[in-house]
Image (cartoon, rainbow, N blue to C red; front, side):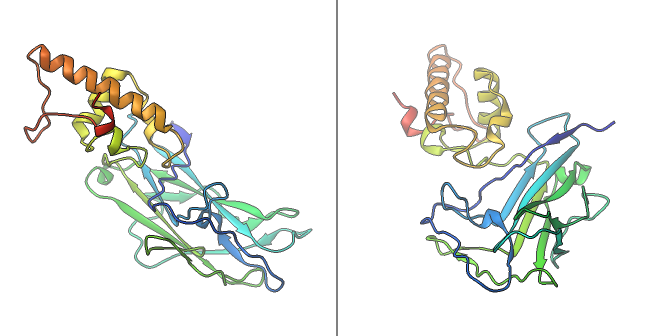
Length: 252
């Protein structure tokens, strides 16, 4: 039986922006992906990445994407419409299945979650697949919220959400070069081994699973290890032949 673990791997692919609040108003009720605005940080994201590479046993990952409605609550369930947009490369029944296909905002609530079960397949080791969800207006909701403009010039959509899945090691967003230096697979796995870190610490969104101070400590500890290896005549090199070093904040 496949191992199923619940991971909301919300890898925030967008950088900092000024905090903005959704302005609610009278009129038609909007349905939107509520990841478009993070209540605590004010940052927006309209994408998420699922990476299977940090675990050997995980075969499926249940992703829950928050969906919210504006306006007043209703005393009845309200269905909403989700379609798979053109350009998606993930195939239903192979790369993903809907965990539940009953898309609705429950009575008395303004929040639901779009639940998708992502499957670990052999082709994910060589290529990434994408799944683009599009919220559509229907008899219950409209999709009139405008995209959020970020300070870096990019936008975050409230009506479209992109989900990526791969089994390829990529630089985690919780990897801070100032402390850890340039990301390489060799450095990452060596750090996991030397410091006995759970690699899943780096699987979540930036600024969440790993605190700045913790990452700084990781960088300092690893640099001390690398220095000790060098003094012992066992300098550690990257795959390209350059000496492995941590970030500038770890050079103490």
